[in-house]
Length: 330
Image (cartoon, rainbow, N blue to C red; front, side, top):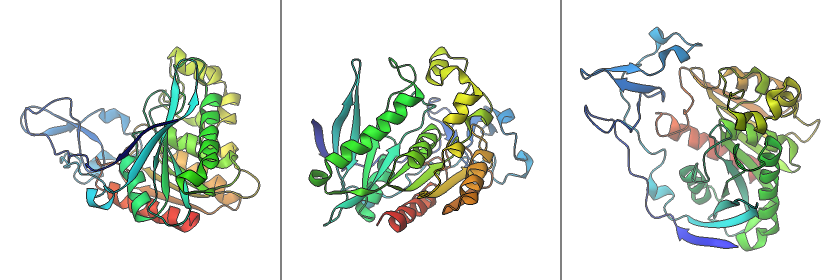
């Protein structure tokens, strides 16, 4: 059932750096998307400094310089996008919705499934709105921004989330004609937990042509800092009690197929304080060893949200992502 049909006419306002005394709820960062805190005399310190284990902070240029947050693309480049929201799957306690950002295309268009992050327990399908709409308008590739079952929802496990993603793909394929979509040309893109789910889906859903991951988790038993092995009971249930065997089973490094491996582009910052960049390094090495077309793009010093408007390379990464999908999906 269609829920609503709307044009994305208004861009997000530009978030600027906070002056002294501004709303403390607004986050400030340096250009690497590292969060900063004001110390009271007009200067700043790095928040959670001890989390940056893999870089020498004394070598980082502009470490304590506030970066003015900017959208990753001008609204003029995507504001004409037509977006439609649908319920694609229902559970007793909740519905799952997807948003289709229609491609500007006279012929059936490829599509990208955009999967939000949030530690498998939060987030929604508003993530990647600008990226999805930009690529739909500028590259003629439809965007499908999905919600999926989250840890804490009734009965939700990693198996359920992956099944949701597969069902979202099937739903789009079944409605391809009315959406002006080519059902046989699709890929995945996600960030953090969404990158993990994108990679797992890309490696297991037949017909996937390409996948892009931003700062993802690809070998779950080796993820540090409690990101996966949280003491929270809902996360323990979601990941089946955190056994190494189970976490290994759902790790993309162990899910690469023998043939027809999708093309893969991985972005990661060497200063990532949440998911160490070696997660992407290892995944790239495994893919390469099996003959895959894989590109690993490491960015020195950048933190977890390197793709976002909190980073000065967010726009650059969007262009690289758009060009990658254009090459492999069209």
